[in-house]
View (cartoon, rainbow, N blue to C red):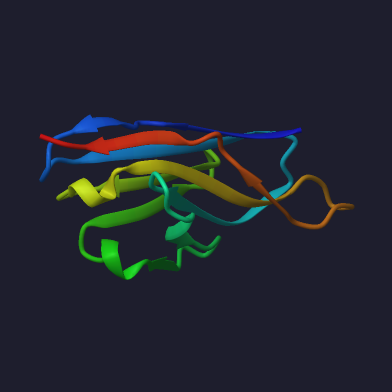
Length: 121
């Protein structure tokens, strides 16, 4: 079994910062891409940022220059540093990992349970 557990969400004022973490655990042979999606109330799920196993990153246009994704492969953890937060960043943030459980399995995508980020004065 594979689990992804997020932490670091909360309430912050506009212009503030938060750091989200997502740790993968369980039977893991290797991890390929990891990343973050978000879903605001009444809106569709949207990609925020992703990072490859080789540390190549990509971002949604609406977070460029404000958010930074990184990973610690030894800890099987992906991070999302969020600066200059805006009210429109309010959403539930979900992490994902493309994970291979053993050498006899292929990669599957696993998801965290989500963490709430609220930006309000």
